[in-house]
Image (cartoon, rainbow, N blue to C red; front, top):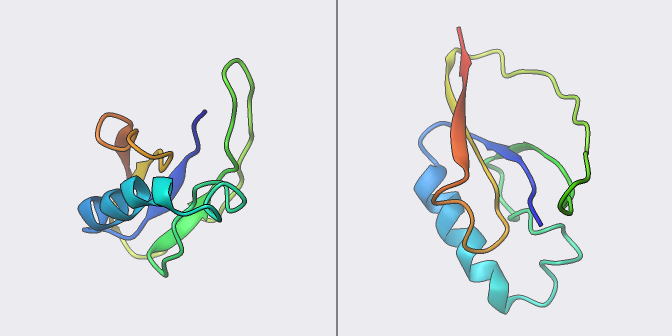
Length: 86
């Protein structure tokens, strides 16, 4: 299972740490493993293997490098990238 979460610049480690700790929170599954944080800008639900989940969002207006990651516990360290806004 995976999701996709777009976050504020410079917050990858912080949100990744929160994501890993969600495994101990019984409510996190009902939140689709999306961390409760003002740094989360957009996100998808959990998507199971061989499934798709479209997402539509307005790109941030401020130029920068916006990290995205999978916040299912343990995934973010290898499942992340950047949305570059120019």
